[in-house]
Length: 318
Image (cartoon, rainbow, N blue to C red):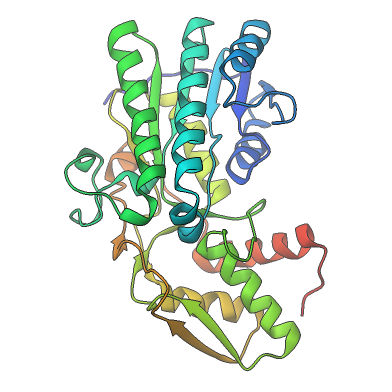
């Protein structure tokens, strides 16, 4: 894969989903690129609304698009809001990708999710194992919507010659995360749970599931740096995994979060809650060959994420 050079300086860059955790990180990273960065709040343009999206693109005509907008959530949200997850995410992908092509965008990056891979695929997960087996049932609607976006990007590249590319981030965490008690991802959920337990002097924190699944976690600003690197240097039909190449059990991860927060009580597990995929580790060899590796350690990233939680929720350290 020969490196290309796509300069972002001076370009009109649209970050779809620019107010979310992923989009905000992209905006922070893009601020160093001398680009004209645009984000649009949902209150102004609902990306599920085809007419509104087409009207906005025809007026703004962004030259570069980072498609980071999505309806996201943890395992309970995915399994409960199944219709919303498939409808919203397919609508967002089809509207933005087609509008970008019709209005002459020079380049587009679609951000998928590692849940697109089969539940029992060989580890670490290679990019070419998409659609080689059944998906994890709890987040199948979301995964199918993301796969549809990936295939749409591939199709527009194949039929129209559009310089559209796909990237697949692993589990992300950091500033701007969602700390909802039921619908958040595991990192935000544990940060909140351990913080509240410490503040209340609770003797025990119960972690959902058995604690045995293994997960890979990437600090969101590392993800943004990888995306900008690939936008500037990559132009191929194959998708690219973005991760650290290292994983950890949920039980050990919970201990890292507890230590960061300063919680010293007991940690137990609730096996009645779903575990999800037994293991999810990305093969990041393609990304490494393209010249990028993660630089934020898990301990450092969790410490930053906890500081962001305190700031964003207006709480003091317990």
